Each structure stands twice: as structure tokens, then as C-alpha cells.
Length: 50
Image 1: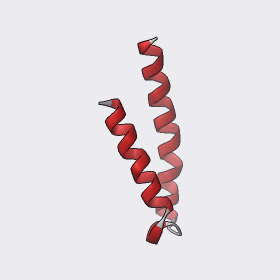
Image 2: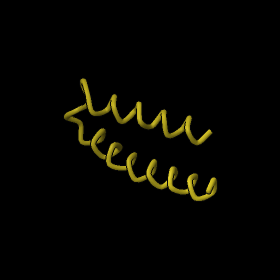
Image 3: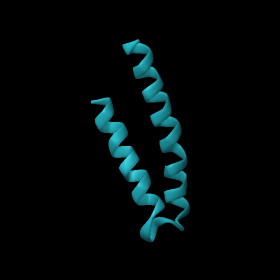
Image 4: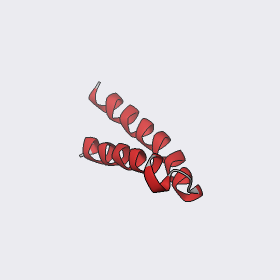
């Protein structure tokens, strides 16, 4: 399930970076939140698995 969420967020990040949203302050703010969230989620998952 975690891979699904982080994968979806990675896709969203790509979509927000390209096309009509690349100049949007709102899109930039969302992108700024995606990376720390996915990093923390993956780190937590790795600790639980290890």
C-alpha cells in the first residue's frame, strides 16, 4: 500500500512540474510537501522491514 501512495505522489509531482501547472504557486507548494513526505514514508518503511 505504501508503494501505491508514494508512486501516486511521484506521478502527481511530475504532473505538477510539467505542463500548465509549472508556474503555479499552489503546485509549487504541493510539490514542496511531496518530497519530504515520501522520503519520511520510505525511511519508516525501510526501518520496519529491516
